[in-house]
Image (cartoon, rainbow, N blue to C red; front, top):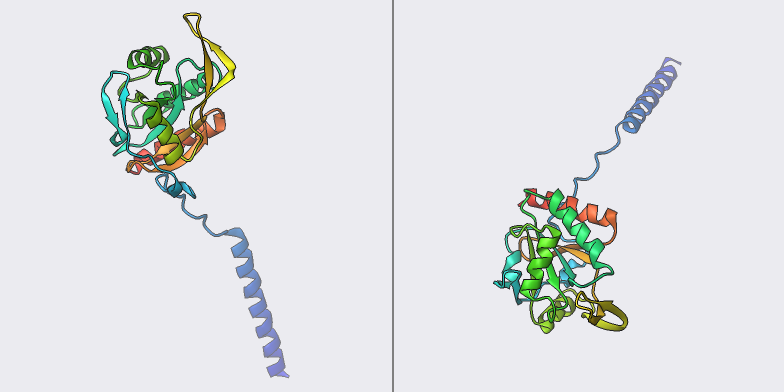
Amino acid sequence: MRAALGIILGSMFVATVIVAVFAISKQQPPEAPAEQSALTADDNMDLLSLPAFELVNQNAERVTNDIFIGRVSILEFFFSSCPFICPPMNANMQRAQAELAGTGVQLISISVDPDRDTPERLAAHAQKLGADPSVWVFLTGKREIVSRILTEGLLLAPPVENPSQLIELEDGATMSNIAHPSRFFLIGPAGDVLGFYDGLQDAQVDAIIARARRATKEL
């Protein structure tokens, strides 16, 4: 009888301990996994790259793809006469410049209209946007080079003129709109593509700015 009572009491004790452990485990959830490094490329970014290139900046100085080495960069494609998606993209690049001031992040804008976007025109455009030349660089060059960066490197469509969308220029002439991506690319210090974001969406721009800031702290 005593043995049976002991077994019952022992079983009750074990059950009480199990209930207590379960209650504690419910109160203390497992730790969340550590946040991924901002310098770790997103999935499938290994398929993208920046091929070797030689362009010129707004000061007519020669620039190669080495401009990306050693720094975190945000890259976009644009043209100065664009009245469609470029103005909001410009505004978001201006915001990136302001919010990332002092971090070392650089901004690179490559023109898809090298026939009109001469270094002199880019310099005027940069001044109009209030671009800090130590941070925000504008590049132009041969059309085939820009096309190769987009197609062979970033696996996107080349810049294409659309005669059905005419743009009236300041001198009264007209030009065809040039289709180009609205993406902002985050480039790592090894010149590798870390990810891309929609340059027209505020939340996406917030995300690339925040990630670029974190990435510079990890260098």
